[in-house]
Image (cartoon, rainbow, N blue to C red; front, side, top):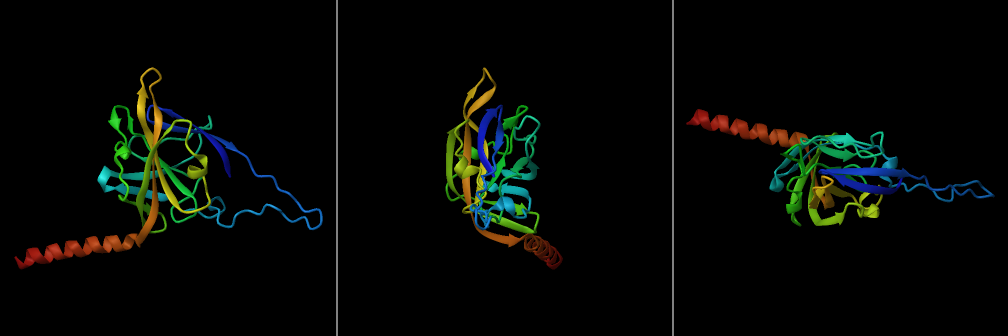
Length: 218
């Protein structure tokens, strides 16, 4: 369980220093029963299916997702400017808790996947394809900004509670002296629907067949 995280932001990168702290186990002197049993609805104790791709048409986001963990400096591994990183030690689509995805706002003089995240609007919908053959649809419920060391751990780094999709990038003021942004833009979204990916392929094939039929009829 992630007990606390310190967040640093640099040149469009979200970096996390992770302090892992297992909760103490209190045993009964009579029955030796764990007085602090694990939450049965804790995503960290469940099998997680990796998200594969994210689409947010209104912000021109259409990118592949890779799993990211911690590097040797205990900082979040960040993908390049073409991919979105999924925090693999958090939750995953379809499970309790917060599914966290982070990406560059800009990198190497190029716009990053989350370049327009600051324009997200409440009510917007986005899609996430998952490895179990489903597309999960989320609706934006909040867009906010935090100082680089002020991300609320109880909302973002949780693996219990209501399912939430959390998108993070850098934003706000840019400090040219240290080449870093001073803030994080964070978007929260909740699940509203899902469909099988095969259904999408069938719809595409049907549309193509209809087009071919129209061409022959003409």
